[in-house]
Structure formats: C-alpha cells, structure tokens
Amino acid sequence: MQQQNIPIGTLVDMYKRGELRLPEIQRHYVWRATRVRDLLDSLYRGYPSGSILMWETDEPVPTRDFAIAQDTNAFAGRKLLLDGQQRLTSLTAVLSGTPVQVRGRKRPIDILFNLDHPEGPPTYDTEVTGDEDSPTAADDELTDDAEDGDEGAGTEDGEVGDNALQAKLNRRTFVVASKNLAALPNWVSVTEVFGTANDAQMLKKAGITSFDDPRFQQYSDRLKKLRAIKDYPYAVHVLERSMSYEEVTEIFVRVNSLGAKLKSSDLALAQMTSRWPNMLKELEAFQEECEKSYFTIDLGHLVRAIVVFATQQCLFRSVASTPVNKLKAGWVEAQEGLRFAINFLRSNAGIEDESLLSSPMFFHAIAAVSRKKDNKLSADEQRRLLHWLLVANARGRYSRGSTETLLNEDLAIIFRSGNVAALMEPVKRQFGRLHVEAGDLAGRGVSSPLFSLAYLALKAAGAKDWYSGLGLSLTHQGKLHFIQWHHVIPKSLLKEKYETGEINEIANMAFITGQTNRRISNKEASQYLKDVIAKQGVEALESQCVPTNPALWSTEAYRDFLKMRREALAQRMNAFIREKSAT
Image (cartoon, rainbow, N blue to C red; front, side, top):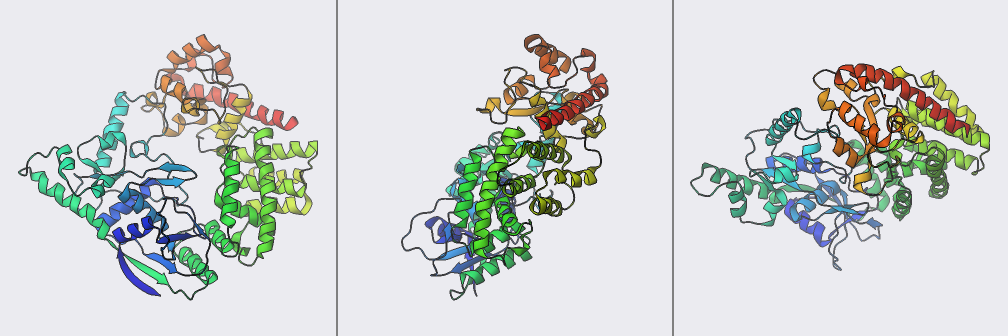
C-alpha cells in the first residue's frame, strides 16, 4: 500500500476534475453544516483530521455520483475514494462555493469566519452528532438553540436570549452562515476568502481604513492562515491495483467498523453492493417512489427490509453469508411489503408521513404482515393490525430497549403464525396498561410518542387552523400553510414561573399553520383565544381540546389549564383509537 501526503487544495482539484470517483459501496453525503464548521476549525488550528483511503484500479467497478457535480474527463484515472468522502465533499463545497445536492435538492454550505475570534484553544465544546444528519436540515447557527417558532422577537426575554447567543457565537472561530451574522463587520464568508487573494474589501467591511489600525496586521494574518488550509497535507493511502473488489470491500468494512464511522446498515449495504452491482440505484429509485407519497425511508431501513424478507429476522450479521439471489428475492418482497405499509399508514391510520411514527421499525412489521398474508387481510385482521399500530406507536414499542430484539419478537409472531392478534401480547407485557391516562401526559413534550397520537386524535376530531380554517394535514402546499405546533400559553410568558418541562408539555400544544403561529407570536392567550372564538366559533378550541373557560387562559392558572387539557386530550386519544379500530 502506497502512502503520500497531498494538500487539500490538490485533493479538491482532483475531486472537481473528476479524477476521483465514488464506488457504489459508499453512502450518501450526510454531513450537516455544523460538522463542516468543526472540520474547518480543526484544519485552521492544524489539528489532526484523519486520513484519506483510495483504490486505483482498472477493474470495472460500479460507481455513484458525488454530491457535487464533477467535470467530465475522458482521461481521468480510476481512483476510487473509499474513506474521506464527507470531508472532501465538504471542503470542495466551501472552497469552491459549489452547492451540494442531496435527494434532488441543491444547497450551498456557507460558513463564516470570525476575524475577531479569541486567541488560544477553543473555549466551547465540540458538538457530537450522528452521520445520518442531513445537510438539508435547518442548521442556521441563530436557530440552533431555538425551541420553536411561536415567540415574539421583540420581547425583553427574547432580547436577553439574543444577546447571550451572540456572545456565544463570538467565541467561535467559524459558524454556519446566517443573514444576521453575515451583515456584521467581523464575520466574512469562508468561500469568499478562498475566492480572492485581495483582502481589501473584507478589511474595509470590518472597519479598517488605514494600515495604522492595530487590527490590520492581525486580520491580515488570520486571513492568510485561513487560506493556508489549502496547504494542509492529508495522508493518502492508496490500495494496490492487484486487489479484488471483494477484498477492497472487506477493507472498507473493517476500516469503518474499527473507527465506528458507519452504522451497521451502511456496512451491510457495502457488503451487498460488492456482490450486487447497481443495487444502490434500485434502492434510490424506490426511495423516490416513496417520497411521492410523502414518506422518506432511509437507505438503512431499505437494507433492513431486504434482510427481513431474505432471512425473516432484522439483524445484519447474516448479510455476508446470505446468497445474493436470496437478497434479491427479499428486495422484491420488501418493495411490495413497504408499499402496503405506506398505503396502510396513510389510508387506514391517517399517518401522512414517517414523522408521525415513533420508530421506522413499524414499516417492517406492517410490511411483514402484508407479505405473510399475501395482501389478503380479513376485516378483523385489518382492525387488529390498526389497533396494534396505534397503541404500539403511541406507547413507543420500538423506542425503548433493544429495538432490534423487539422487532424480531414481532417478526417471529408474524412469520411463524401470521396471527395479527398475537402482536398485542408483547405490547401488553411491555407496558401493562394500554389506554392513555391524563397522568401519562404530565411532563411529556414533542419528543414523546404520545405527541403524534395527540395530533392524529385532534385531526380526526376536525381540528382546524385558528385563522385560515384549514384542516390539519402535513401535506399542505406552501410554507405558510405547513402545520406547526404552538404553545397555547406562550412560553415567554411562563418562563419566570414554571419549569421547562411544564411549559413544553403536550397539553400546552395546539396544531396550527406557520403563518398563524407567527401572527399569534407571544400574545396573551386571554387576548388571542377570545379573538379565535369570535371569528371561528367555540368549536375551534373544543376540537383541539383547549379549555374554553377564559379563567384558565392566564399564566396564573396555567397548572389548572394543564390539568383540564390533559384530561380532555387523554379522553380524545382513547376515543380516537377506539373509533379507528372499530371501523
């Protein structure tokens, strides 16, 4: 194995010219902008940031596209990038200003550099995030600490929070760009710095108009140090041409297993694609099909679905020893099962997208029922499956303990007997009581499995947006009409008197559109709820189980408000499950 040191600038040029290719065993680009920020910070400080692994081969290996379009080069070499894709794609995006493409959507990675950053080692903690985070998620630095969007920006509390956040960001050397920060004199775009060798405009923006300014030399030196990231040498290991694709795949799996860089599903995918050319294209095409029904199924769960139908259990450990023809047969079954699962979720349960599931594992259980029954479910089986889904989802069946063990327990019931009714037995053992009580909602927030049940129950009860009158749906067109959750009693008015857990309870949440959320902002509940009743009728509150007694809308009566609404929500949620399961 050869080893050489190659500067980042040269590697980025190789990437852009198409000299580097991505083997099919590699996963998508998945880094969030905050991870790119931290990579730049490490490179700026000269910290170690790993190595690069390549394989140069003439073997016709299936490849996939990078997240950044490359130049077409008929004379390009056959260098396949096995380790370092996330870093090189990130650096190419930032240094060249080229947006990354993820699931058909292009988005630039814009990082700002603080000319006035503190000297010395970092004074903040590095955030640890999973590789599965998507770069298309909202990760603006100014919204990182925001809990939701229903607070006014002009309140005294809000101003204190903004000042504290600004002070926190000023301690950083790099941040994810936002319009507010980019407008400040000491913040400059990293891409802009790499795009020019002339510092005049950036220094002028920073308020430096003379060489005599004591900041002139400091800022100039820092910009020079930033540009020197291009000269940072990565240790590049190149595997021998004589190696086979299977052997290289084994190295890929071992490298990522030992470094804990990839999830087990990523490693299983690599093992499959090394024996099943162009498999990834089939999975991605099915992903796009699901997206048309508003369901996003992660590649890892498509891989798991293949394993489920090829081996009748969900663990990945048997992938390497499972014949490829059996995996392909499992994929055929998986597609049909997942199509049924999506249709059942949407049509029977009213679950419009995967965000209303407490775990994606439900896809596999429902898909297994579909294939075991050959899509022939009796009316009784349909009711029992729906009842199991609603109860198990609300209770978080696959959200506690070993999710794979729990799913395997359910798969064993399905594949051995096909007895849908028997699925409820493990749920009873796991949770005991199945119905929802008011006390279950105490202290539970938006991360609780009960939150999605509250949404489904209120939607079924005819809940509508409080201003537009639109019924609840996660598939509304236009950003103004997207459904959001809203603190009925604004949290900025509760902060001084109540604990965070109480403030953010499900019992203080209503479902309205983003536009209405902004219109209400942090108005007193006694003010805006009275207006809602006047314009939409008392049913607008009743359908969302909000107490209609104005005496309960004050901050002083907040705990009484919570008590009343917990009871109303619990009754509505139980009624919803009974009504859906009886149809």
